[in-house]
Image 1 (cartoon, one colour):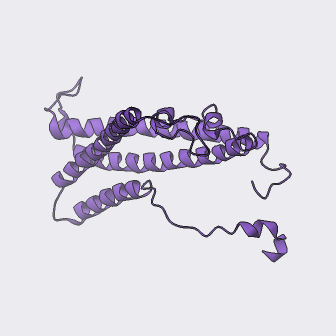
Image 2 (tube, rainbow, N blue to C red; image 1 turned 30 degrees about the vertical axis):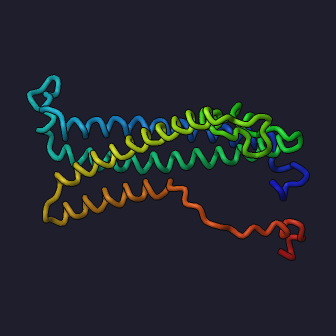
Length: 225
C-alpha cells in the first residue's frame, strides 16, 4: 500500500474482492469446525460410551472394524485443516484491516471500528481490555474494578478455550494409545496422527520474530533497490 501512492492498485474494487474471499474463508473454516466437532464426538462415544446399537442393524459402535483408528485419523486431519483455515481467515482479515487503517489514519479514527463493520471481529476482546484503542489515545482510563473483573474474565475465557483444545488432544491421544501395536502399520498410523496434530498446533502458535524494516527503500527508484 505504501508503494501504491496514487491509489490505483488498492482500490475499493480490490477491497471488495478481498472481502468476498474473506467470507469464503470464514465459510470454509466453519464447515471444517463442524466436521471436527462431529468426529471428536464420534471418537469420544467409541472410547468412553457404551456399545450403542446402530439403528436398523444389530451392530454396535464398538463392532465397527478399526472405528477408533479411522475416527482418530479423521479427527487429526480435520484439526489440521481447521488450524490452516483459521490462519488463512486471519490473514485475509489482516489485509482488510490495512484498508481500514489507511482510511482511519487521516482523521485519527480507531480503525477497529471500521474493520468491525466489514469482517467478523471479536469485539468483546476490544471492549474488555483496559486500553480500547491500541492505535492511538483513549478518551478515558479504565478503573481498577474494570481491569480486575474483565481481566479475570478474559483469563477464564482463555482457560476454557485451552481446555477444549486439550480435550481434543486427550481424545486423540487415547485413540492412539489403544492403537499401540508392534507393527509397521501401527507405527505409520501413530506417526501420521502425531505429526498431523503437532503441525496443527505449531501453525497457530503466533511465535514472534524480529524483522528489519527498511522503510527507506520505498523512497528509492526500483532500479536502485
